[in-house]
Image: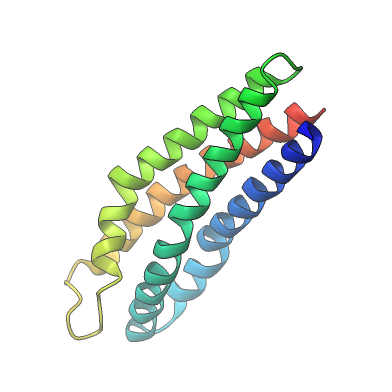
Length: 148
């Protein structure tokens, strides 16, 4: 049963990493290359959609890692799992303090109501997101290593 939990958790976290990696290095560069009105509308829609989905995914991933660490406390690799959990906690804290406030503003923007500095705010969000992606990739790598 523990093996199934380990694999399931790793897959769930890996898929989350894939989505966030795609946002950082595929979706947002595409949106940034569109004319301003299209880009702001795309980012606003993405902010609404992913802003609803990703918190559930992050918390579920963290809960699964916590269950794995608890259930496998005396097994090989538990330190890696706990460290991955700490990194996921860090990613949630980063999200709440740095990314969510910008996202909450951006998801309401239209070409008519966007602030003059909307691109700067989106660039700030992107920079914070790159760091968060690095953190969750590290957490995922630790989980993969704990499987061995």
